[in-house]
Image (spheres, rainbow, N blue to C red):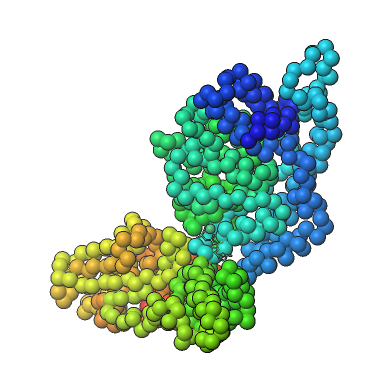
Length: 594
Ligand code: ATP
Ligand code: MG
């Protein structure tokens, strides 16, 4: 960058402001130090960074985002923007519109405040010059009113999108930025261990530089961008490199973030105009204070029906365009598309669907190119049918999943939500081995899930006679007729599992094991049980039901108290295909299962 440019930018900074003082001081230092020396370079780099931060005063001329907010049609346009970027997600879009309405009110209030301030601070540009003029002749520069956080501005909540991969968290953030007509920058926090990555290294450090926040601001070029903090659940906790999560809290805290301190820049930066949106796969690993600051918006994944629509309206056109094909070159039949959705992808979101469609489109793009190069002699078929998929995508991974499941004594399907926020089924396997009446639990289980295994077994033991496992009430089913140990295992042994929601599945597995009766493999269940055999509600119902639907389950046994979740959250087309049994007690669960 040109030195003159830097100078101009310092001159444009608000008189009396910290950044200007710092800029002037460093500028003078730069002038004293011989050019070409290391120190000179260091200062110059610093000044380049300092002047590239979009300070409020130097960028107020750009009012495009304010104009967008002032527009009477703002909310209508925003809704159109959201609709044109994403299919479905009605509840979420409604929440976002509410959010945008609030942001708009607040921002306009702040803007009015600042206009008053600016009216006070009409400073002639010549008095902004860096070179000291003769004090006698100098105009008196009025002290700039503190711009600070506006009192009228009630701080808006920070959005937190939670959900499995590929459901549109990042792209919703982009959509919000477009609706507000503001620049969008994504900051990836996954695996950040070092506080300095967020707030920079001190300048005393060799090769120091600013942190991610300042870098993003520079790229955005405006003090009011939308910054998407991706994967906030994966930011590291306090360690010897400082405390990244604390730095993050400071960034997001409206009480503190009007004077965010980047160690490198070393001048407080006002982040109060930045709109932060966080994304995360799960809520479990997010610290309570951070959760407290956020407005949580849950995205759960799509049904087959929704995926078909998303594929037709969004993914296909996107991939076709990316690969230079037009509609008449290629259509994928409905059955073929459904086949991709159901058999080539097993996910809550649409990322591998997008990838699969991409593969199909590229495959056909090559064929088309060859066809054209051959002078259109070779035949080209512009339709992809179900039969063609195996040549293009290979043998489908999920083929025959349901058929693969075999009914077995002691085997029951439970429902889980993985750490990625994705729902699915989880086999609960039990076997009996000669032993001494003990319960062995394996599969990387946490304390809570282990305890619920013991509760389930205790319940089965006390009801063994009623369940026709023993011949009188005094007998222990693990000792009668021969002493055994029960080994319970939850496969994918390397994946950590915890939570109480496998209670009824484990109890059913014990009953099946001890009675010899099997449970059909298209039944899955979830629910916590108490020692008295009551079934209590569990979380993640929507994800679990969608996962069960993907796994072609036909009947689900769920706690009575979760009825409302199914009614509110699960789409009609999924509900149609699954029989739901809501139970209050373990007895009811057994009746439904066997
Ligand atoms: P991750 O947790 O892995 O970061 P994500 O939730 O951020 O995932 P995105 O990258 O936003 O996922 O979405 C993946 C792709 O799916 C994008 O191309 C996005 O446009 C598309 N997509 C997701 N949901 C929809 C939808 N409802 N309508 C249209 N396109 C969608
Ligand atoms: Mg993302």
